[in-house]
Image 1 (cartoon, rainbow, N blue to C red):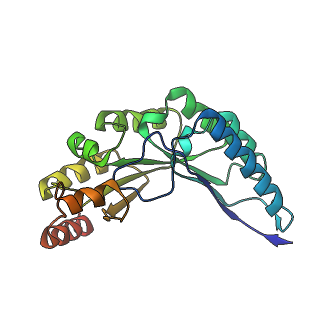
Image 2: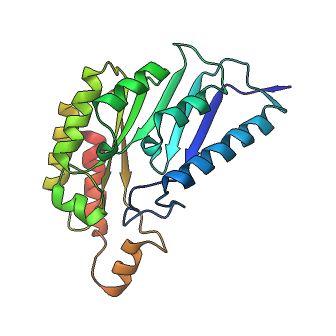
Length: 225
């Protein structure tokens, strides 16, 4: 029987689709989420016939979508299908708007020990343009709450080359990001994916791509920061 040591679990639900996102996602009702989890558990059962899930996992990663929309009992059911201990890195991607102190504490009880928080930018106007459901203050508050709840491993995501973003705006984002002292940082350049609201707005002239020279300057600034 084949052994696996690292597992990715995809949760395709979002409170609202971001304007730049081309991933398959939907705003699931409680019944849809429950049905998805039940099918996911069945699929894990099928894979267990080929892969040895009794082998302790090195990493388990809940990505999406917005996996922090899942009820705690659903996460518990999924994790119960795997073997893990305190040394297993268990990550869940989090939208700042979808968690509170109680949920973070429940994550800790389940053994989830790493958060990946999608901040994207600390500029509230740009957050609205992106279609994010949180604001910058909520992002900072959730980060601080997570630290208070005992999370010692937190990754923060931000984006650059956003519509109307200046180099000064990016500098401000990086200053705030680094001041939080996360354990890991992921920085992504915006991609204008076909089929997204951003792409349609680009074609209609409502939005403009970042100038190539400015985007290059932003990238260089990030590398040297």
